[in-house]
Image 1: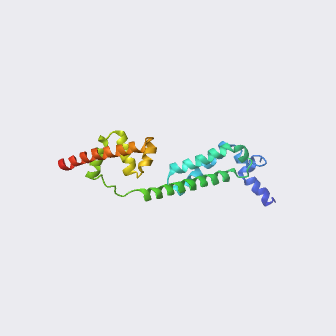
Image 2 (image 1 turned 180 degrees about the vertical axis):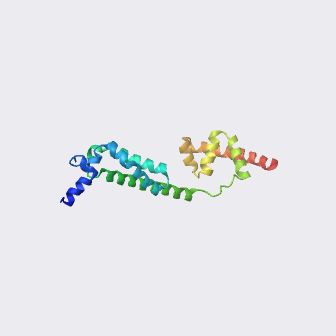
Image 3 (image 1 turned 120 degrees about the vertical axis):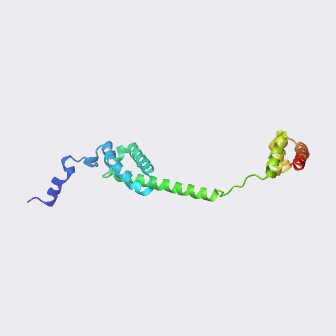
Length: 184
């Protein structure tokens, strides 16, 4: 009578190949590891993601990382466990990034963005008629809230020049907007 251990050895498909220390006999080769386990890991991650392409991408990335470390991984008792862990870590990271992105989009998305008012359109058209220096001064001072001194520093001109630009711009804008109101 054979012992249970001897019977298990004879019935095991791995018993036919000689075992290499530190390696599973069936997984001596990276190509064999890939061919044997790619589909199974993809099925697991497809169930997690619900997206076959995403699952394949994650498993492929895990195998790429395994290939880069194959010299070390090939000595592991179960290198597929390492690949599986990396694939699941990648899947979790992608899921977290996606969840964070969706949360950000839902918080920042305006449900309804109203169109510009007629006053805003008239102001934009009037600003477009100003010389560039005056337009920048008006925008920085009145819309961005910078002081006259800050605008002067930004434009690298004296404070008096900015005051002059603002005065001329206000006069031109008043005339332009007044004519818009009368003709409007």
